[in-house]
Image 1 (cartoon, rainbow, N blue to C red):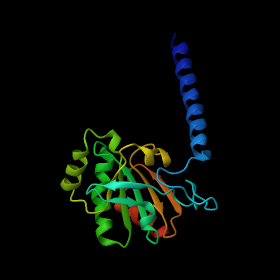
Image 2 (cartoon, rainbow, N blue to C red; image 1 turned 135 degrees about the vertical axis):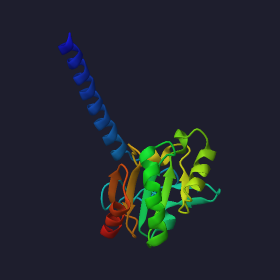
Image 3 (cartoon, helix red, strand yellow; image 1 turned 90 degrees about the horizontal axis):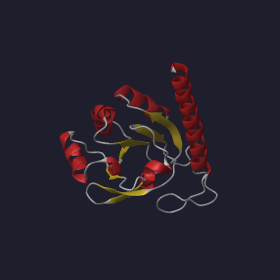
Length: 183
């Protein structure tokens, strides 16, 4: 009986891995345009190192709209997070410190569709005294565009708008500095 249960579990895990791999490939090869606007056909946009990071436009907590392309010419840490995520909470003070001390941009994309209410994000930003831009991914369009699994996930983009690294999981100050220095 134990062998049967183990065989079923292993088969299910293998099936899930194959499904996830196929789903991932379909998302990578999809020719769908970004959530807002299309890149010109001759631009190499994608999620591989050296490709232009897919552009998007989202609303900030203050109601202002921001596009990733607004930050072209700057080193950007695109951070996907949620208020309920303990590792996200742990890295926020270091992100704020870097934002204050270094000549880099932090753009925090809140996975608003996973929050209880939008006000939770505002309260979180006030509690942590965050001053870097926080944008709201209310429809999970950008999360899907960037294939975000798990949170937090940080994407490092150079001054030309090209993706240089994806880091899944929480980072500390030194890790963030190391990534920025590599840009």
